[in-house]
Image 1 (tube, rainbow, N blue to C red):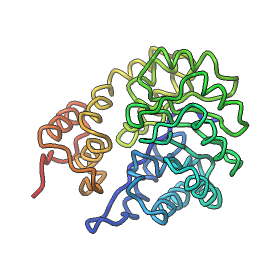
Image 2: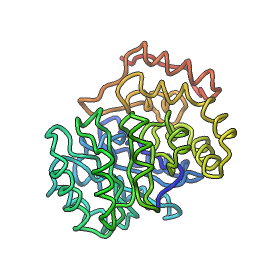
Image 3: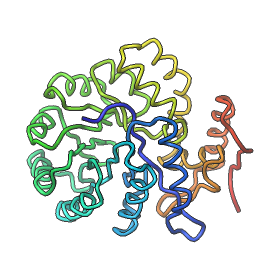
Image 4: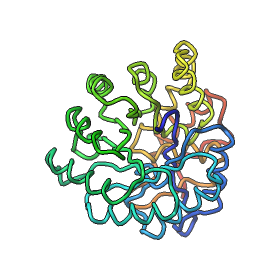
Length: 301
């Protein structure tokens, strides 16, 4: 159901720490204008664990309003408290989103049976399409191919954002999932190889910076033009990599500041601004790509 490039939107904050609604609207509009395929507000790239329920819903509401429903909005809806996620899913459904992205429960390391029941409970509470998000490097919880295939038997679990970092696991997932089930990369740098294996696209961090380029990469790969897709991949691989020189979304927000897309990269604790050395690395990559709009600022007083 979901294919191409979806942007895991960052959340802009105002100087007082509140949600910067004006900048959010501008960022969403840019995404739509540059041809992105779908939007993912309120995910972990959007620092969702630091948002209140009201802020989370407002973030999604603004995304829906500014995109004018011209493309699907897949809202972040994940965490370790199943009952809370079921409740959030109902609120997001009421707003009119087209799908949910639900990261695996983190920290508590549920068994495969616990994971199955967690997602089954969410799916039973809504008829919205659900994208399972597997990112064991952050959650210490891996959805293995056999469990994913079992989850795919639930009618409205329709896709996986696969960020295990294990290309062999990705290959096995693409081989075992039913027809029509979407396998989306959770790592920008492996989007192309995953799509060559049969994947459907990516939920992307780098498309916050270069939405048009990532949409083009996915369009080319979906059309079978892997030579063209490789050219895009090779150009933007340094940016994909530098976005993770420190914990995301630290570097991507600094990059957007340097590109003039944010007036300042602001975070909520425990996230902080990347080190001066990392900011310099980000600026060097942007300069090499020709997208640096203002002088890099390594640190602020």
